[in-house]
Length: 119
Image (cartoon, rainbow, N blue to C red; front, side, top):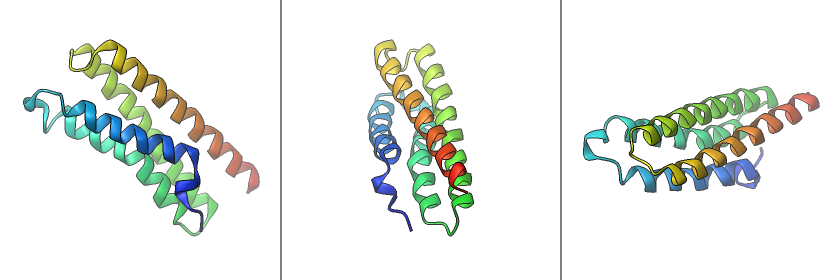
């Protein structure tokens, strides 16, 4: 079994979760069960699916969970974009987070490709 904590993409996505929770804490209370909940869930889903995939029996299963993680990263990308456009996040803060999400998506794609080559 692979220790998910050794993956740089897991480490970065974990830090992203902490940043997202911190920023959504500043959202209007009316968004608590809307954007806040959805953003937090999408953010947590990225490292969670990496961890779960590492606990699976086969590399094919790991790849499946990495794809789910990537989907959550794409979802979070959009949620940040709409939050910025609604004025819940400063543009400068959103851009830093969006850049980090893009890096995480690239890292996930590279990891998937590497694992696929080894099959």
